[in-house]
Image (cartoon, rainbow, N blue to C red; front, side, top):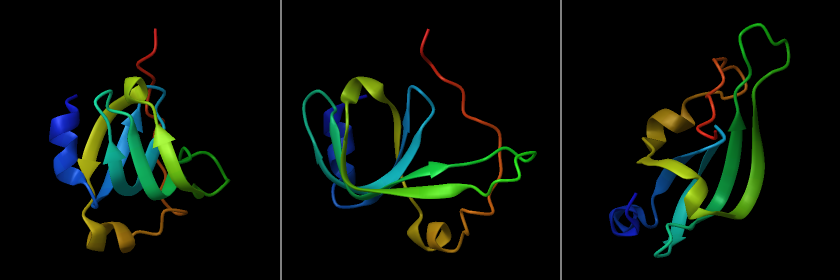
Length: 100
């Protein structure tokens, strides 16, 4: 992943998937040459499986740094669609890890 390409997402809401399957969403405020990314108003979305009685959750992280070597994907978020979703009701399969 190139830091230059990610720079086009500065000051926009992004979703980041990490190598261990975490999902983080926030406003991209900085990215460096090692693709370390810095999010403002970051949340981690913990999506529970359909057979789990506990609701899914969004954990507020505030300003958060994610090491570039743990970033698998950075994508823009469709903000109106994202805001219309009640993330506590979303259920789904766990994203697998890419670690070996």
